[in-house]
Image (cartoon, rainbow, N blue to C red; front, side, top):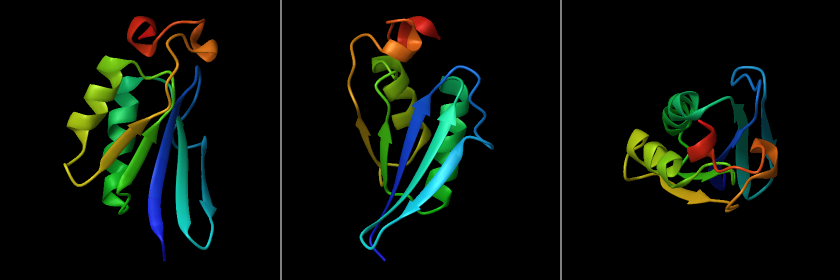
Length: 100
């Protein structure tokens, strides 16, 4: 088994229990989960850590404050990375910090 990783994306109307999927490759197992806001993202990040995920990437909708919240939600053993947009097209061209 290779790396266990997670990706959390923000989307209006996303339901974390419904909008999720696993991708299994020989080198990476990736869990992707859609969430409606930062609060739910924190819960999902902790869940992912419980599942053994050690690398977590956040979509470009997460602003600086959102990334900090996720970083605080998980232990130091989880590496948090970010896809970067200054103004996310899926959030009315705003940062998640402004939107949420």
